[in-house]
Image (cartoon, rainbow, N blue to C red; front, side, top):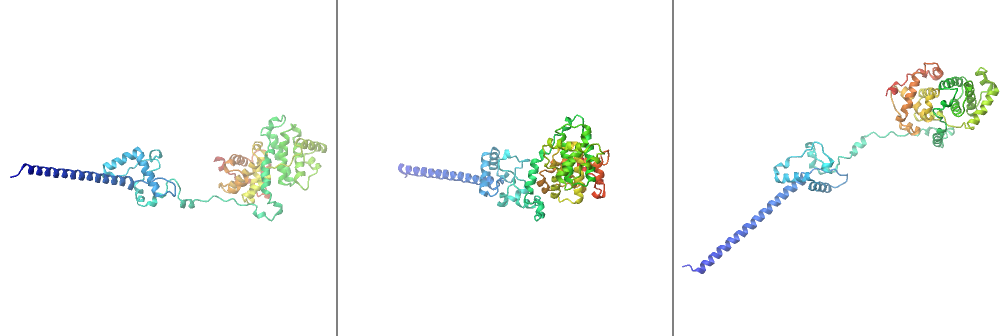
Length: 421
């Protein structure tokens, strides 16, 4: 017969067993929850890390820093957080890719998404080290190298007359002082009895006289420079204009030539319109007006230098001389500096003899200090002068270069494509 004490012991044992079972069950449930949380954490880590997308970083940055930047961006960006939560709640969507049509830096920070064709690169960690914003070094090697600048004076190293040691300084000085050679583009407005047409007639006639006397090229350009500078400072009557031209030619010959024409020869070519005293009086007036300053750079020294830089042949040299002498006659061309006129003549001649091929080398640009775009306006004007050189009354330059002495270069077809460009 079971006593009450024994019953109490059995009840207490049973209660203890039940409590132990409940405690064990509660611990087991907590462990299961922890396990589930761990599993979800692993899934979350796998989703956020293993399937992460490459970040755009600089070269040399380690893979861990890239991944850290991506994870940090995903944690703080609202779009990243929503995507991560959806992947945690729905693991079956892990294989799906988010494909924005146009990636935006403002939306995605330093990270971008890739397409399915690029998914294969995610298996290779080295693919993450190549940024999308920089060019491949191998592609840089394929690029065409910049055109070199050649030393155009190396062939004259032993020529003492070429002054190779000082030639760069000389032309730097020419570029500095050429502005003193220029005249106001509207100086003819100050002349009461003269106009642009009269100036053109005088210079066209002087070009023929220069050719008949077989004078140096430097003499012609200095003659025109003296005429323009004198007329820009002193008013001259129409009947004295030819005398101004003759005296300017005389002064240029005294400065440039070895054998100078005598005054009587100049009187004869003027058909005795002036006397010897008229020539000497005008010579004094011109020198005093110009303050005896006749040593200024003209178009010719620049032309010789730029032809050498262009490695021009004889045909190109004659054509450039033809174009720049056409510019001497035109009053409107005074608005261009001497160096610009010379560079434009060389470039236009290259385009003309090149049969439509336009090329202004780095060597030409270096020595002329003018780019191709800076020459285009002046070049178009020269082409227009070339097109109408054989027409009208002022054809002295055309007839001069339409001889065997200059290889009939005046008949060369003008570079029409420069005008239409």
